[in-house]
Image 1 (cartoon, helix red, strand yellow):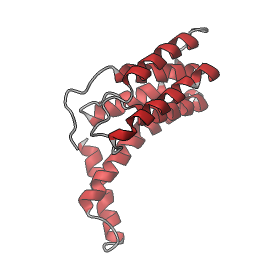
Image 2 (cartoon, one colour):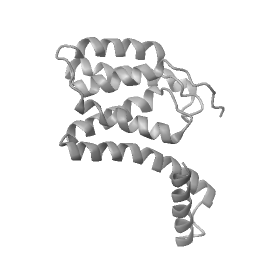
Image 3 (cartoon, rainbow, N blue to C red):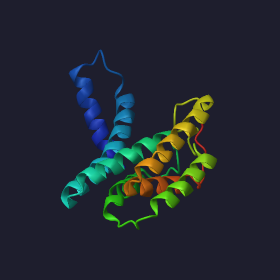
Length: 178
């Protein structure tokens, strides 16, 4: 984390120097840049793994599915951004490289769908800026995304959705207050 914070601060200072009047404070830019960097590192790393392994398109689908479903369903949040980055990279990069038994898509998708129907969105209060009145809509969008795999039957999606569904089952130890 210190390396990311240091990089974010250096970037914020450079941005501020280029236009001191029309930019926000260094502290605000640093905070925003930490979020962006923490988002980019695991997904970029996963895509690089996909390129190296010759499974770029499958890895890109995996990354896209994870970003979309996680954004609307929430899930467990690690206290360490380093752990979060590593786990996110592994979850995004692994599915294209794991053999998935034929015929399991329907069953695993159904299990995921039920878990999403019961628990989504989870662990999102205080992390998302979305008002609680939109949580039911987020659940519907989550179910739409997961339910689409009943039609597409994509093993990469199946694996992403079951891992994300499992992350909904574990409450965070500390609640984030807004």
